[in-house]
Length: 135
Figure 1 (cartoon, rainbow, N blue to C red):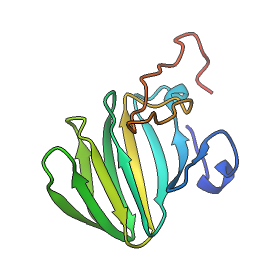
Figure 2: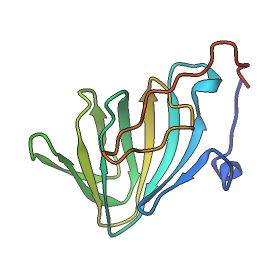
Figure 3: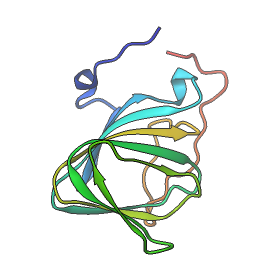
C-alpha cells in the first residue's frame, strides 16, 4: 500500500511549478503502477498551452472555472467542477483559467518527474529504469 498527503510534497522534487500552474505529483513512474497521478492548480487569469505527444492524459476538474480549447479543431469546452477531459489523440490544447482551476490528472505512460515542457509544451518520453526499486 502507498499513501501520500499532497501537502507533504510541497517544495520537494514532486512539486513542479511554472508561471501559470503548479503540479504536485502524487504517483510517478517509480511507483510502477502504469500511470502517474498529479494534483494540479492552474492559476486564475492565466493561459497555458500543452501538447503531450508521448502521453495520454485524463483531467478531472474539481474546482474553478475556465475554458479548454482544442487547438486542432478550435472547439471550446467550459471547465468547472465535475468536468473531465481525455487527451487520447495527443491534442494540442489551451486552458484559460477564469478562476483558479484545481485538476486531478492521470498520465499514461506515467511521468517520472524529470520531464520538463519544451518550447511546444511537450513532455519528452522518459521511462523509469527497469532495475530501479519501486520506492
